Length: 278
Image 1 (spheres, rainbow, N blue to C red):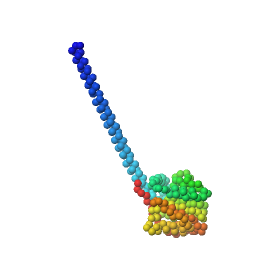
Image 2: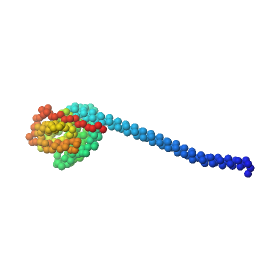
Image 3: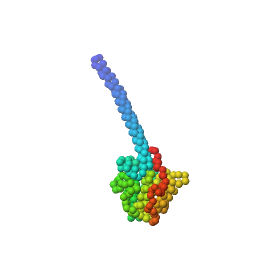
Image 4: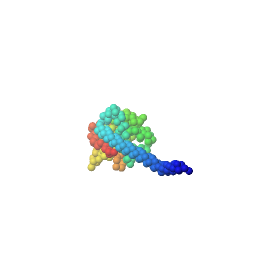
């Protein structure tokens, strides 16, 4: 082998050795670059997730504030005022009931569940009026025929009306249900309308948030019961259900008076139902 060929072979060997050493370094750099891209993508995902969580929390707070405003509005309006407000802006009704569902989802038991349980022990042939029915869950949960009434027909079958002017004949029903629906400053007129609808011996079933009656001496609750008794009912049940609401059950007397008006009875002012901020 000539000296020139030897040098060429030696140079070729060095180049191959250099490439062999360099290749792992290049692969290592590529892997590092891939890891950096992955970390960057993960960071972007975390940032986007964080932004989404913050936006969701802000949206929930806004919805909660909107619900509490609607709640205050409906409790401080008369029945006719509330009916007119919802007639002009029916979307408010859905907003209210969405907020209401969120507020009560953590309750150990719901008022409508208590109404369902009570009716399941009663005659199947009874006719029931659900006054302020919401999504008419009661009508789909019991054996009795239920007529559902509210300010808006949230589902098919609900009869739209002001609850102090229900389009049914007098003495035509066996049970009137108010499930957290004695809303408005003239709520007493709803009870009087229920009395008109009920047959003698019929039942008035009421569930209300306890805080609406809360006083040190329970005078507001006693005054409320007294007003209902004055229009011809006897109290049959007064029971607190957990820490959230109470159930009042009355039965209409055979000699119930038909001439009482809302104004003449002096119904006590019930507190606006307060829900926790979420």
